[in-house]
Length: 148
Image (cartoon, rainbow, N blue to C red; front, top):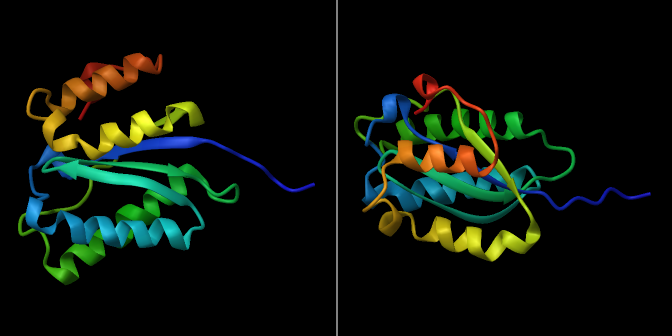
């Protein structure tokens, strides 16, 4: 029997110490690079976007790919790419943790639109509040001292 899955993830992470280092002019290049990593892992990227202090990735994982491994590969490879391409002057690496949330295929379009509109969304909401909302929405217990 073949393997069939349909699990959509929204992955959220940012630079160390929530530094606002991901300048708008170079984000598209970073997103294109990350898109290539995801594609090379046989995963399907639906949307990637972000603002100065974090990014969102909406993807479906290939059944052979572990979430933690994908995120590690994205962070390691993109950190090297950022340094070599001299993209973000004060970027010192990615934070250790991340948020990863699963969604039904029925929510795909809403989720894609949400990620597409990150700049507008973050005019009225800071990352910390967004993460608290996501954690609560998904019923994840957390200690606020460990938030972004």
